[in-house]
Image (cartoon, rainbow, N blue to C red; front, side):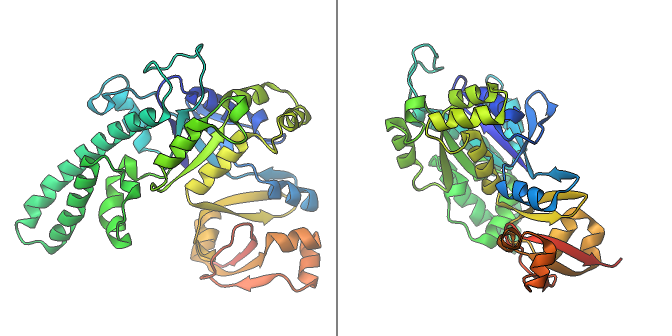
Length: 364
């Protein structure tokens, strides 16, 4: 799972990445791993994991993770290679979701690349560059499909209609994710193109301390313009997150948040939002050796979930023993859950629910 942080220069993008990449900003227990300077593995905050740890007392706990990429700042003309455009577009194409940082605060000491604060203009600047790149890719594909369609190829004729609709939408400055496309067409014709504007996006409104709880006029404008777009929005004070990440202890960070009237660090919310944005959910395995959070797509079957642990589990799947997280929390141990008759035996087609605690029986 990979989410890319994008935005114009000086909107708080790299500061946000640095906050996320600092383990102290996430939890008291989990380390942060850097793959390379602008890529990091960030743990998904999940209080359920701590609860299971306190009940099971394992040797170790392993959280779910999201890979976060700080992508080079984009400038006008990126689709034609201006600035670091080619690098930016190549990197963003490899991500599964986009965290789009918008500057929603005034500060004369922080220079804006376009000379004034306007998150709507900033959003449109990046949207246009991404749409132009997608348009280039759609037109290339459409040229090939048109040639095949002229021979009477029925599949090509169908694809020609879909691609023509994509082309028209991009020419009208529409993002592909906002289009109403039949699911079969999306899977067969759209997904293989890996279009950037088809990726799920979370708009991160970077605000000052005074606006962190309820937002401001800039945030309201962003909410209005994305109302018909399939996307999310999160209000975040990046400078506040930077201050939190500098504090040494978990207790100090909690006191700082309480003083601001906040329940938790915004960066923790952001990571969970990214996880949801990627259409993922968590199930747990719990034993003396480890308590572990496993990441699966929402809608996964028990057999598919087993395959995340090991392919042999999926191939030789017999059954899954399932405890809901709420039952585990209520009865305090697996033995007590069994006694209460709350452990269920499920087959390969069972749809795993977020928070399920599972044991798999298999034979290869």
